[in-house]
Structure formats: structure tokens, C-alpha cells
Length: 532
Image 1 (tube, rainbow, N blue to C red):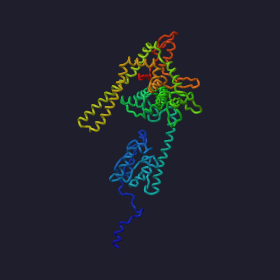
Image 2: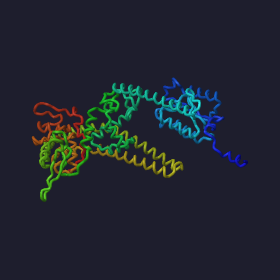
Image 3: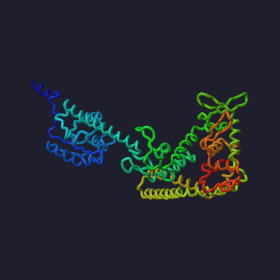
Image 4: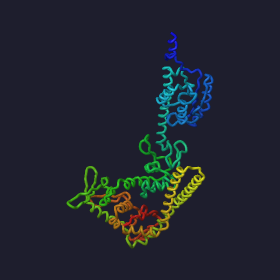
């Protein structure tokens, strides 16, 4: 009998016999508001005061406070104080028995996610208790049901607010207000109002560099040279964002809406850059026998492709239209002869060379003015980088930095310095070689068709993009090209080749063309890079 009495102490108690209600209750208090504006209503101080009264009345021992800040309960993932509390309370010694909140929605508005979190806490013998919605026994089925309903009600309330808020956002967006975080180059002022920042100049540079034919990697390097770090993906997003030319595009509204914000670039520049991007940076074909591939379009709008065909020991090359509903095949030499004839129209006549030099000097001076800001930015960036190098070198010499940290940071600054110096050298080289710039430009314009005919594939494609930036249309029936557009400088050359005058020189009809009225009549996009 004695042995039985000794063994009974090891018997498990019935669940109903367990004492789930600790006699000495310890707790933590969690308070929050969604924003500074909400302080005007249910403030953090009010929540703290009411929860403390609640604990005092029930003789709970408060061992820690959490929250006391602005945290939205729409998503628990971004709530730092909330996450810190959940991580710490399960390892505390002594561990709290309860989390006290003013109301259930102060804890969370995520509904089922919050219920799952409550279950996890319960396994650690921690329960949630609300001042406004007290549950007599949170461990009972009715207690769990009541608490779950309170959390789901908070989620329902949150969803209703979201629907109302979304409706308001849509209405404002349709009126041209930007209701989200301002994109790069802008800052939020107040509800729906944004304005350009100093970074807007970087946005302008990105679009201008792209227009000049720079690759995304080149643009990234140029930005880094002036102290701006931006990924290629971000640059691509900037170039595709219609917000910069004054429009709003969002998945919650249909089509484009004219924004009330100030545009950083013009619509024309945005469209030109994106069209150029499609034309100039599309998949390249390395077949030197088909330089017009994807550069020329059929009248139906589809780009010409090309293919080789072997006949005995010979290989012939053809351009092909891949448009639906019809087909077109043409020998490459036919299109090349026609393109050569077209270029002759835009090739500078020898008797106009001296007058052309005057125009180029004017253009060069305009370019110099544009480069002034870039020079200043590069100089400031170089000075800043050298200052940083000197600072970390001094800290390393004093033993304040470990070698591996110093090496990593030093190499980053060194690379940035080299890029900046390289960009400065390019500007200096252009500035100091005016005569070379002019001679090379004239050499291009007076030998345009010959340079294309004898040049490499890269030279051919470069000339094509500079002279006809939007590409060409091939009319197979008429056997001729129709330019979509032409570089302004070559339009002028073609015009004055016919009338025998150029850039401000009176022609035999008494008309004049003023150099000053044609800024960037410019070999804009023509760099002395086509070696023939």
C-alpha cells in the first residue's frame, strides 16, 4: 500500500485539474499608433495609462514595455518593435504570462496570421489580454473563439478602411495626384503633391546620355563618376517611367493621366529615347553582309531580317520581311546600292566645307557650355573621393581600421577616383582638340557614303544610327528608301547641297539660314569615332 502511495505522485492530472491561471501574473505592455496623426485621437500616452490602470487593478506585475511608437498593423513583417517583443518574451526569465494591449487591433490587424501568432504564444504559456475586450478564460474554447473573432473583426475593419482608402487614391490619381512614394528625382511634399529635387539633374543626364547612344553600362559608369550609385536595372526603370515626362501610370487606373507634378524631361525626349532604345539596343546581328538588318522596316511596320543562300560555291545574302500576310525577299546588294545613293544626298560637297567649319565652331562652343556643369560635378566628386581616401588611410595608420576593411574601402574609393579621372580626361581631350574634332567631323560628312561602303559592320551601323536615328522604311514596289527622320545636320547638308549655301550664307534666292537659329544643328550623336 505504501508503494502505491509513493507511485501516485507520478500520475498525470486531468486536464480540468490543471491550474492554467498563474497566481502571480507577470506581463508586458504593448502600445502603438499607426501614424503621428493618430496621436490626436488614441495617443500612446492614453494607451499606456489605461493598460497600467488595468494591470494595477488586477495586481499584474509589469516587467517590460514594448511599442510606444508608430507602427501600422496592416502587416506584421515591417513592425520592428512588435517583432522584437515576440522574439524576446519567449526567452525572458522570468517569462511573462500575458501581453496587455489597450484593444485587440493594437496587437494586429492581420486576422488569421494574428490568430496563428496567438497559438504560438499560447504554447509558451503566454496569452493576449485586451483592456477593452477582456476574455474571462483565454484557454477555454469560448475564450479562444471570442479572441479570434476580435482579431478577425480587426482584419475586417482594416480591409474596409483599405477599400475606402483605395477608392480615394484612385479618385485622386485620376485627377493627376501622385499618392505613393515619390520616384527618384522627386520628393513628397504633402498628400499627392511632389516636386523635383537636385537628383532631377541626374534623371535629365540619364535620358540625354541614352539619347546620345550610350549603353546602360556606360550610363552607370558616368553616374558613378559623379558620385551616384545606380544599378542597370534601376536606370532601365527610370528610362521607362512616364512620370518623368509629366504623366501618371498605375495598375489601379486605366491608361495614362496627366499629372499635376512638374515634368523633368519633355514628352519628345521620352518618346525619342524609348524608340531609340528599341532600335539601337535591340538584338544585334553580327553578319557584316546584312548591316541594314533590323534597322530597316517594311511598309507594313515589321523589321527586315536576313539570311544567306548557297548556290554552288557562292553564297548570296537576302533581306526578308517577316510580316504576316505577305512576304518580301530582296538581294542585299540591291538595298545597299539604294542606301549608298541615299547617303550621297547627305554627303557634304567640297565647296561648302569652309562654311561648314564655321557652323561646327558654333556647335563646339555650345557643347562647351553644356559641359561646364559636368566638369564642376566631376571636380567636386574627385575632391570628395580624395578626402575620403586620406581619411581612411589616416585611420588605418592609427590602428582604427583592420586591414581587410581598409583594403575593401580603399579599393572602392580608388576605383571611383579612376572613373572620375577618366571622365575628366574625356572632357579635357575634347576641349583641347577643337581642330581635330572639326577635321574629323568634316571627314565624316564629306565622305559619308564611302565610309559606309568601306567601313566595318560597326562603322556602318554607327553611321546608320547617326544619320537616320529612327531607321528607314523600304518600299519594295518603288525600290527606294523612305527616311522616318533624319539628323538635323544632315537635313541641312542635303538642303544646301541643292541650293549651294550653308548655315547663314545667303543663297541665290535671297533666303538666309542663321546659324544662331539652329542650336545643335549639331553633329549631335556624331562623335569622331568612325575610322574608315
